[in-house]
Amino acid sequence: MADESRRRTPPEKRRPSIFWLMAGIAVPPLSVLFKYDIKGTLPAEGPYILTPNHYSDIDPVVVGYGVWKLGRKPRFMAKASLFKIPVVGWLLHKSGQIPVERSRSRTKADSMKAANKLGELGGTVIVYPEGTLTREPAMWPMRGKTGAARLAMQSGVPVIPIATWGAHAVVPRFEKRFRFRWRAPIKMVIGEPVDLSEFEGKYHSKRAVDGATTKIMREITSLVEEIRDAKAPAELYNPADYGQSEFGMPNEVTP
Image (cartoon, rainbow, N blue to C red; front, side, top):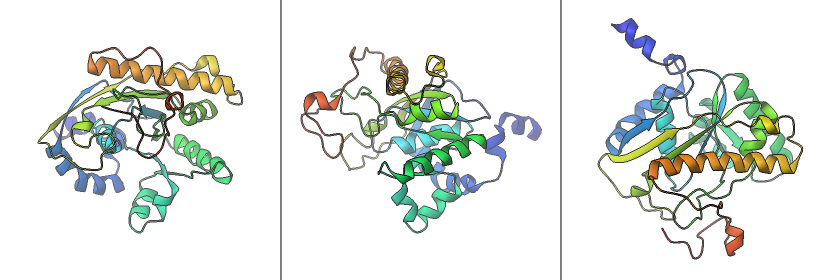
């Protein structure tokens, strides 16, 4: 019986790691806070880039816990400044999180090198292609930034889109307050790898990278439509078209 249970547990989750400690601390309260309805599975091994939608500040926790439930170690591309915080930085390093600087200069190559190294080790990388909380008024995915597409095109690592819905019941968009919910329902859908073969070898082309980014965002949006049982706007929302900043509290955005 024990052998059968072991076979059902994905190999990555069976290997001792810092994630066991982190899961031991985080899983009990998260099990009380959220109730997951997950559709789809993740490959048990091998590298890939996971690209979720982003509509609540608690999204990384929701996605990370969902990925762990599916048997993979959740790793993110995180702000480099977080790695300088005592204890937090140590945990980030030990758990294989990838530091990313805000500047475009020297650290861009370093972060890509780290992500490629993680890919070589067979790990997953979670990248939010929108780069920030969506500014779309009804919380549909907005236009994406090129980081996830460029990383996939450079490394050859496949992109798997993810959609979640329900996190905003606990932490509403653009609000810092926490609303306790008993077993708040979280819907999560794992998509099929995005076919980026038409862009292969073209990561130096801005047009190709933009095209790949749009394709990834379309796939994510399709999954969100499935979860919400509704139709998203035909065009991906672009904050610049409405005079909105992509950082801080946006103007003229309502849930």
